[in-house]
Length: 316
Image 1 (tube, rainbow, N blue to C red):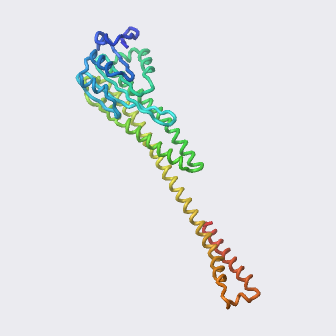
Image 2 (image 1 turned 180 degrees about the horizontal axis):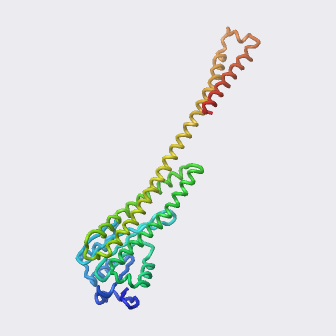
Image 3 (image 1 turned 60 degrees about the vertical axis):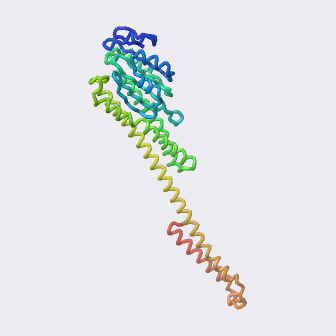
């Protein structure tokens, strides 16, 4: 797409990109989704890319990075989208040059249509150059990070509420582990982008105008806040998991106390029955009229005293 001050946006063929490059008046934005290597080579030839640049664009990246080449800057960002509480990751490459901007999306569902419409309705933004549009793209990615973190935060709050109501079961423990693992993956995917944007805002670059560096700093702050939120969610899940373990241990201790109390109470009649079950011939109580009621009463009294003591100590 060709953007020119005072004119409507115009679609141009790929083989005519080189003819329309005019940094002082035109801005060309080439947007690609999962392109074939041959198409990258064709566009690279029109924009004057080196073989190393084309090779780097065709490569799939798993971590954010920034690379400086002669006449252009390549920024790689990882996209994060959350559906059914499971994150999916993609890649967006932004190649910034004088008078042109190339974006390459892979495995990313959301497009840049809204940003294009915003820029088309605000021509003064396009006048600031491709570096400003690149900062807007990174800001758009930050918006999607915020949306993804909001969905995960809602899921974490549901887990905490469930834990407070009835505690964790085996399936809940597995879910908490999965959430923590997903949050760690998101942290690894987006945290390097903070330092990348800081670098673009502070280090001099031929492709980043001094007036646009502040925008990259704002993006860095936004991504850092999202990363801090994700870290706090990981800690919340960790606390919930530890609390569930402590509650489980407390419940096991209560059960152990109850079993020990009843075992001690039942030990009294068991011992008495064991003594009189030996059936010795010379046992005075056997021929005594009140022997059986007395032994039964003493046994019941001993059991009652033990029960009272255990209840008093809150073991029963």
